[in-house]
Length: 227
Image (tube, rainbow, N blue to C red; front, side):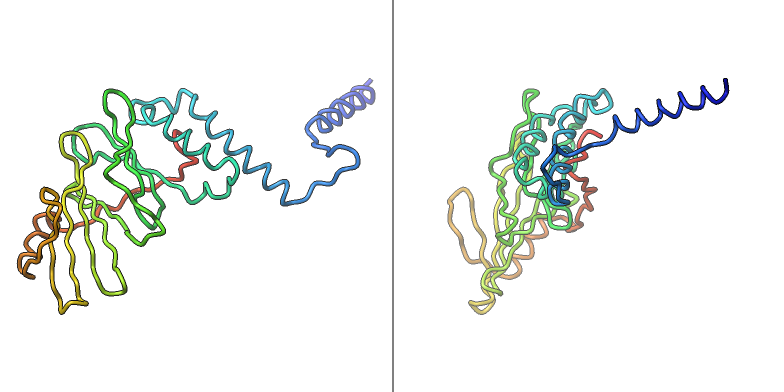
């Protein structure tokens, strides 16, 4: 009797193992590259599926679901590029609602979304090309500073911060070392750049940046949003 039970259990176990085995169609081969592609594609599909789970529907995360899903969808054809995309939730204007910052960990912010009338809205005045050299950082006073060097010498700095619920361009400063250390200030009201002294440059920079302390953002992979 004991031997019969053992045989039956063995057959059941073998059948279960066979059910879990993936066998390629007859006459085809499966390369490692193909397996990797399938794995990455499946992962991207699972990401959006995860967003419907109850654990992901917190008041903080839920408003940006559609934004994240559309971003992930952009990488369907190139899922390996999704690895470099990151996000962080941070209250830029101290109004109690966190903005969605998208970017590249170790580089900086590329997009900012905020909630307006219960809808996630991209802040159009803030534009960054991660391949254009303008590296943005978030300062403790809520200002986003973009700084880049033109032609290896000319220092350009632009500033964005929230104003009336929207991320607005404030002004820009330029240190033109090609022109014997001349300094310039852009006035958005007149849309003109005017020369200023170094002392005025320093005063404006202090006014815009405060103590200049940079926020260390806790970037997370975009693929893990809502988990």
